[in-house]
View (cartoon, one colour):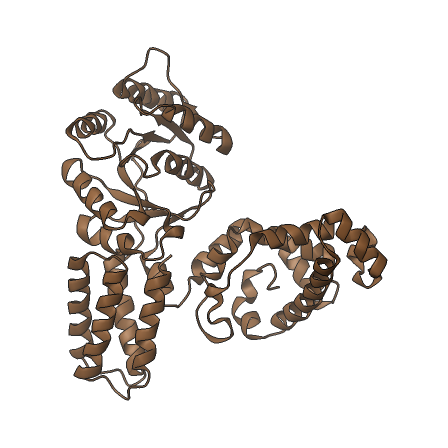
Length: 448
């Protein structure tokens, strides 16, 4: 996400590096390029105008700090202003003083409300809550069944309603009663949507809001629709009163205009972003971390949190010991690949790395996820002795392994070559190289 904007802003900063000091001329040129970059990223024109005015005032209205180059000075100003535009600080979900906390999920049809309801329920469950879901969409065919399927997949409860409960208000009232009786501390209400905002939809949502007195009214929007998402969120807020926004499909949005505009236009915070199809692909929105990613500084805090959540610490420490003592086998190599897959799409992980030094442009690396599947299949086709000692694998064994894994001898040869190279590289990294010094505490698989 934000790839196009990030690339363009970094080109602006690169051009400034050749300047000895900030001047009106080179600053105006940089601001013009930043303005164009933001507009091409589909950021709302009012947001762009204010953004540029604020940067200009700060950049030209103070002395350049002696410890900073002009470029660093401008980067800091742009970063601070971008954080402010995105919302200054993380806006967490509010919880009711007396359970259950009720969260009303609203939005237009096709924005991803139902899937997001499941994702948010899973996130709440992983963070110490006991959620109950209910769908009050009685209009869209199989809408309630869709949420039921999601509930089964994530193994969390749903109130499906009695046959006679055919109205949204009836379902919501019964679900609220069910959550109280079963001790559920959060009730998530997936509402109906329309292709366009209409009075009938708004009246229904206002009635639900009056009945449930929700702690949060979260508007779900498709990030790839850009300013249409911003316009819809603003209209919902004016007519219903929302408390936060969830943007879906952020992983497919290279522009990021909606994320950069929505807080400023609606006055309401962006609380979560959907970054994939899987049910764990929902992340709290951190304005400071996103600003750093846009400016090529990476998002190491999110990467650390993802690693700590997904990777077994004891297993990672054992793997580090094996690397240092040169005991890292093909079986270990396979286990590391499996652990890496738990972190999510590899391109997303690489996008969190800073765009500096030896790992510069790492985010541009195209990763073939199927290659990992082939590698695991090849290693699975080896005998335990072969996995323990790759030197045993001669020509005849390579042909057998290739046949057993549905691959070619060349692919087996490539794997063994990559394994040997990875073994050397990982040992050098843990021995105090660039990544070893900075990421040693992460216990990252393949980096330890």
